[in-house]
Length: 317
Length: 317
Image: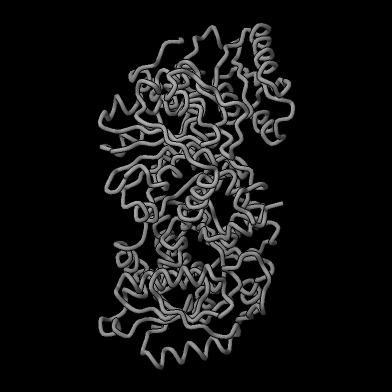
């Protein structure tokens, strides 16, 4: 299970999750097309179940498990979209989900996971205790650990968003996705390599969490240490599996400032009337920065999710 | 032109505006369906051009004009979505648009209208000066006055949203739309009467601007005097044409509090990940108030628009 997924795994994942996941719409925007003199196709994973692409990977992982694993449940550590995604996917297969989460995680995030029937196991807000707690839960329950991104089943599942986009909108010149732990961009680049080899795949990353950019430059994983960026879904660093895929297949990683992320997010809200989270605005910001030479091109963007806290918005004066 | 429009006029409007207006998507929501034990179909006019259904009516009015009216332009008084809608529609037909707008209208609204190439004529923020200024503009330019709602061409255009919804989702039990000046609900109820006579049409109104509710009770137009509601698109009062249509065809007007409007708007933003304006949340609030007995029913809702000021949101703590 620790080997790199292939294009066939993404196709299989698409079949596997079809009964459970939304085939999300592709939106266009006269505003962005005019601004960029390009044709931009937005794959709206903010409309996916649990409000983010993460459901695809979690669903694929859970429904890939052999029947004899079902009684023992699944486990992960996450306080973000993966936690909710795994909780829902497990519930759909009638499994228990054990979610290790820092005890200081926002109440609204704990509640969302609990609403899907998952068991929440609190830990200290440190990497060491998080991993120790997760290992203890797995040892005690026999649950299958489903890592948020460094897992071939997760990567294959995340790749189904790009696969759907490329089926619906062929011959994209460029395809952009955000980079956090690298699950989405890995799946995206594998999907493009299989379904549309002429499409150039570009990862977009916050400047303040540019571990993928630096890791590719260095040729080895250089994690971000406690990065501070508004794109809270992208603070994680690459794993060995995602690093290897990105190093082999992704043509370019671009970085953008938090200010550019907020501006891009505001444009999408105001002009497209859809809610995207800061992480989803990162590739949009990369487009607006104008270093990608998209004029006259056909560009795909994975809008990764739409989970925001309306009580704490970045553009409220 | 002052006679009441008929179903055939809505069909004609649909053909007339088809090259210019978006056929907006219909969205569903597992959250709302579960909460209400109903099947709810949201017609997303927040995705319409200029961000609101108003473009339908303006477009139909402008493209209904005889060729010899084109050189003289169109005129209206509005600082809201109708102003932008008329400006864009006129621009598409190569006409001038004269928009009378209070001199204290927000800069962002003036700018949006100017961006479509319209001529803005400032007036004092009083009804008397607004009407006097509009009459003067019409007299001086020969422009055709396009009232925001009390006009059969406008009403027929607004009805095309419901017509599209009923074509895509037949056999709705209920269909809800907000009520301001009454153009949208009039067009909606005429569309339903023609396309789906079994569908019960319900207008939803802010309690603080309940002129339609009171007018129907009284049997004559009782305007709201300077109403204070967050639903800024619904502060206008019925005209004689819209009053007559509503009195004849609309089965019920329900009113909701501003608090209920904000709650409903927040639910739509958080659960459906789409941006709607307070006016669009009014029928959603009516659904959530639970007086409509929608359990087991098929319900349509016209989400009228998505133009909000992100710097001044009602649910920011």
